[in-house]
Amino acid sequence: MAHDVERSESGAPIYIHSPREREFEPAIGDEQTIECVSSHIRKHVGQPKTVFHETVSDIVHVDVHWVAPTPDRNYHTLVTSGMSDREMIAPEPSLRFAELMICLPPTWPVSQQAFQDERNYWPVRWLKILARFPHENETWMFASHTVPNGDPPKPFAKNTKLCCAMLFLPVLFDEGFHTLEVSAEKTIRFLSLIPLYREEMDFKLREGFEPLLDRLESQEVTEFLAIDRRNVCKKRWRLF
Image 1: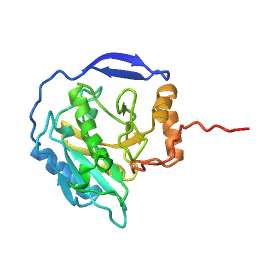
Image 2: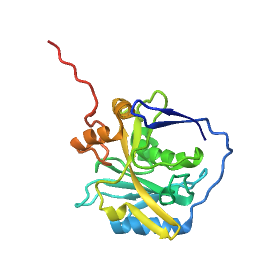
Image 3: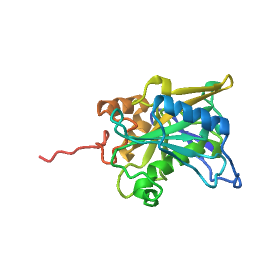
């Protein structure tokens, strides 16, 4: 649970979360949500090749739907289902439910065997971490929210220097994918995971979300993961 709130240089709130005190809470997936999310993915993304199911789940049962690359969308698309089984403590009722997604390069190894290597698995791991985060900490998550990989942040894996996670609205898919109305009381928002460098996270804390977004958009950074992409806030020194 968040026990303290600080302010960044930009004035944005920084929520400090205490270590989890609650016991393990076994969870099973909500069949209605799974079917609704699956149908939504088929309509707006494509036919999933498979679903990576959890065998043991804590708080919420988070599955990851995998849509393989196609000629029209030459990237792997991973979408969660299960984060929306519980509502978040959001400031507006329409923001209480969410699921997450990310796109991986077509050459990215995607299989249970490949996921034994953390260099291949970390994007999936972070979809699951973030899907549980608001429920573990009794908070909410939406576009512009960021979570570092530790304090200080450390790289997600040995194959990248990216070390922080930011949520945003999917860019590579039409707006119809952004929301799913399950019922009159439940609308799911689909958010993209965009990994950041330490300098980009620091820039956001100092200058705010909009200035960082401008820099990311100028380099066409989207939910498509590029593990060695340009750092849009890296200082470049000149020697004279």
